Length: 449
Ligand code: ADP
Image (cartoon, rainbow, N blue to C red):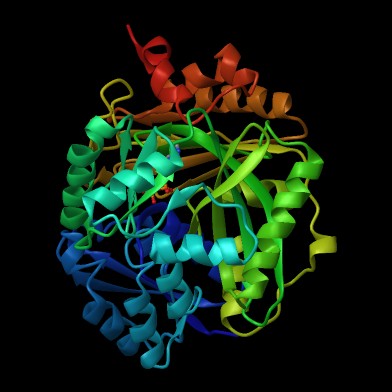
């Protein structure tokens, strides 16, 4: 087992990883930019190294600085968290070339799934249902026109290197094809330096349901059920729940087993998430994330497993700590992503937290690096806390969530807590009756004047 892990991240996820390490008797090294010198994960870690100025390119994305930090502290593994370098195959390769373990899949698997066209083709071959579409030949307008007509409008143009919803355009008919495809291509080139595009059938009212999988790198894999992440604004998840209110237990085990079989088939190592759109009883693969997800705690709540611990075990060569038949699901969990943003305009609200009182009690977990006097820096993602609530039933969970949101005090800056309070009181949300478009369609009603 590792003795010391360098955490190549910041904020709540750095703290989350530190906690798992501590409980496993593993020492931690925090890295931080000059803007994060006072951060909680830096205070709690055994050692810390300043790796550069606030701009992430010069700190959290600075591979040479991270490698030197690992070398001077003698860390034997690196956990990348999510975001930043977590899905950068080159980083995984460089870490391993320095005889340091990368807590994640192999560079080849990161690369395969990072190319969304290759990922879709691989999943199709592994027997996973994918969104109907055409993956090549978009450079030629005549071919693109033929492909779109064959799929049937509306179609969605997507970037092979895509992420965060960028380089994506819905095209309703042929008259829009050339202009929107070009726009999407330019956006993709700007965001990813790669303008390879593909076309997919645009599904009008799906849910976003993703399956948590784990592989040991030796052909064994399990699934830990699904998360429903349909509540999104601008393709960013706002609230997630597990299990999905839309699935029955046969659908759950059937999609879970197919997902686990697929990753066992490629000898996948570590945690992964297979994302699907679900509509009219059918699943369609959209992409695989080769890292820990922000919303992993809802899975932890219903399975009572520590996913970071499992990642660390597998990366050190240990087997998965349980088999599929030992995985049990209990109750219902919801995660609210609390952002330092105004809940109506969604403008970031960096600044000093003057008051902080997180909720507590049975079935309540708050993952956050906040404390009274902490200054939320303006340079990074605005996620400042995750409130994760568990109950024996969905109803118990929602009642508890309402109580927790009322209790949660974060003073000095605006947060998105009022949006979550509105959601938890909304009859359609309470009924579990929503698709990926529901939140945007209902935002005015939820948070308008
Ligand atoms: P990214 O990697 O940019 O996040 P995804 O492929 O994961 O892109 O898609 C992001 C979101 O876009 C999905 O959660 C869903 O809301 C929407 N989406 C993606 N593909 C489709 C599709 N074929 N039809 C309808 N909506 C889609």
